[in-house]
Image (cartoon, rainbow, N blue to C red; front, side, top):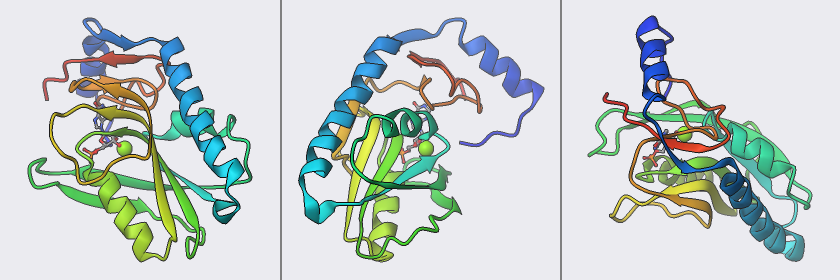
Length: 193
Ligand code: IMP
Ligand code: MG
């Protein structure tokens, strides 16, 4: 979510960390990134038919995961990004807005989509469909975290770093009111709207 910076949001952002609850510390976060890297390396180092994939980060939440994961990947890859946000009614999936579409050629390619978190799965379901429409041969999804929301999702991730409880979290790319993406650990916060 993109917030317009205001004193109201700054105050909210500062206050909600006062009773934030640590969900995963920085060590656990790094181990989760190692795990995803290892799994991707195993697959993409081995299989020539999937060689030279295009890796696409979903900005802005994926920024930290992308940056740290990329340095651990050992196969030849091209990197690009897209900027997609979802807003509106959660019940009806909301409206997906493409702020930046990838300019790289996706046609006939294996595309690895990286994102911070799979929550209700609407965003990544839409992204996957659009990339397939654009001619991608295959879309592989890797997320830093999968939120356990207790119901089926329209899209599943192929690779998952951590499973999170159904709470609103900040850190490792995830924000509240536009803040705290920079934290190296994962904290649950009460946003209160
Ligand atoms: P989905 O369509 O519900 O899967 O939305 C996923 C997007 O919502 C993620 O890429 C995040 O940008 C954002 N999001 C979902 N849950 C959280 C959270 O707990 N904290 C911060 N951002 C979140
Ligand atoms: Mg996002």
